[in-house]
Image (cartoon, rainbow, N blue to C red; front, top):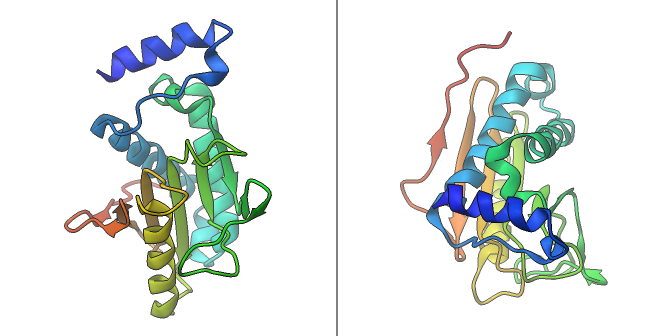
Amino acid sequence: MMADNIKKQEQLNSSSESKHYVPPLDNPSTTTLLKNLLNESVVKCYTKDNVLIKKGMEQASAARIFYYMQNAIDTDKRFQIFKNYNLDCEYYKNINAPKITPSKPYGSRPDLILHKRESNKNNILVCEFKSTNDNNHSDYESDYNKLKDFTSNSGIYRYKLGVFVRLNSENPSYVYFKEGEKLLNQDLLIPIISRD
């Protein structure tokens, strides 16, 4: 199924319609692909930029993860399905207004999003990062509520997947959100084996 989607994407990339093509994002394999894209980029950050994580530099770490994700989208055939989307950090606009949600009525700035700018029809990934140095659990709840709002089917954004990424000193951990709910039994801890 994913191979068919990638083949269709490649065909459309060579046609004039490619800028309008939107892959089917409710597909479970697309969600798995998003998780893999994020995790592989986080692992690269742990491997290549570990000092940022060790020092609790959340924004710098998120910027590097953004870099690795964009590079993977541009160069790895597995992630070509996302090539016609925009990957942005600290993106606070909802077309021409601030991004507001029920839990953030004065505006919200997600750490990282994969979407189509100037529209809410193609919002697919929203991420929040927390560093080792941030032990304020009320901030976690605030980010959880933000991710619930951004993924809610009753909201205006309707991101397909929300991810809270805890940048622990040794290993990242993930909490996933879909359709406005935290996914139970979906917390994932990925061991970092090597840091060459």
